[in-house]
Amino acid sequence: MADKPDPVVIRDGEVPDDIERCADIWVRAIRFRDGTVDAQAMAQRVRSAFDNPIVRFAVATSPRSGFALVESGRSNPTEALLRFLAVDPDASEIGVGTALLDDAVERARLGGCQSISLEVRTTNARAIALYTRRGFEPFGESMPHPLGGDPMQSYRLALG
Image (cartoon, rainbow, N blue to C red; front, side):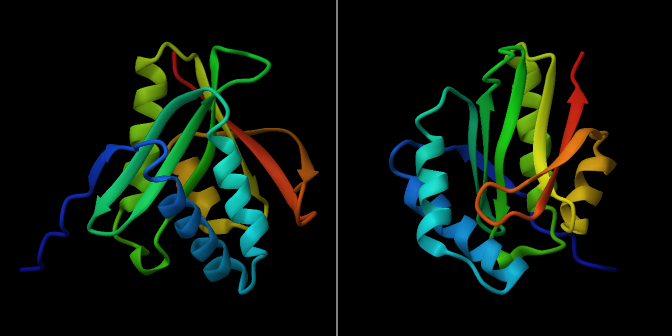
C-alpha cells in the first residue's frame, strides 16, 4: 500500500514578513525552469507586486514551500489577476501548486470576483497543463514578457 502524501498546509501570507521568502522562492523556481535568471530583477518584481490591491496572498508551508499572490483586476475590479504562483523547485509532483491554485480561485470567488486571469509563458507546458486542468482557457493574443521577451499567453477562468 502506497503512503499517502502529506496534506498541503496553506496559511495567509504576512506582509511584509513573507515577502523576501516569496521573492526567493520565485527566483529559485525561475532558475530551475529556465536554467538562468536575473535574480535581482525577478525578486524586485515580486516585491513591487505588494504595492497593488491584494485579493489573496497565500503561503504553503508543508510539505514544501510555495506562494500565490492574487491582485484585484486593474482595469476590471470584478476580475482577479493571479500575478504569481511558485513552488519550491524540490516540490514537483506533490500537489503544492495545485493546492495554491485552488486556494487562489476559491478566495477570488469568495471575494466576489467574477473571473480570475493569469499570464503564462507559452513554453511553460507544466503550468499550462495545471491551469487547463482547472478550467482556465486561453484568451487574446500572446504578448512578449516585459523582461525576457518570451511569448506570454493570457488565460481566464469564469467564477460565476
